[in-house]
Length: 222
Image (cartoon, rainbow, N blue to C red):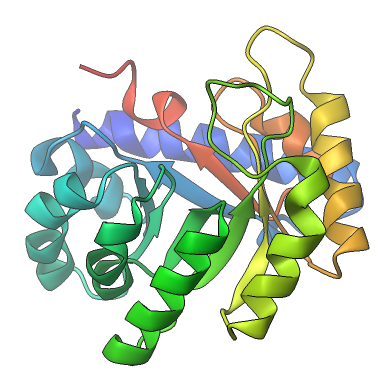
């Protein structure tokens, strides 16, 4: 992607976030844009870094290990978020590489992450992923299991940042975003990781603190 293209796309997304935030009487600075770079190689990511983006999201630990160490060496201050499912046996690698993990969804992962953090002396922020539409094919903790999982994560001293969700495809996302915001309030959590390329302005008006945007920044995935 040419760098002027990257700058334009980044400016457009940032402007949409700012507009939605202002409409909800929020500061645009209260929203973190996570540029989802999964499946994109380093040459495709570099123009966005050059345009000033510093927070990126990846779906897979292994893919991130292959490209981010070199990119981070070249540009200090990059923050990396894991936005895809995490297997418990990859907890050590995830804790070593990522600054935030958006897919905490089960007690076994609480245990694995707590152990990995103690070992590494690193404490990435954790978002509990909620299966907000109760979809069997999606990851995330069931709404009914959420209070117990949050309690367990707190007992394990994980740095809980908030909740994350992916609403059902082809349905109006606003009710699901509003529900996630209510669940977060009930759990005493402030962070809301919600909203992607198709619906992030709606998510921002409903309280998103982190939006995960890929296609609007990178174009359609290869």
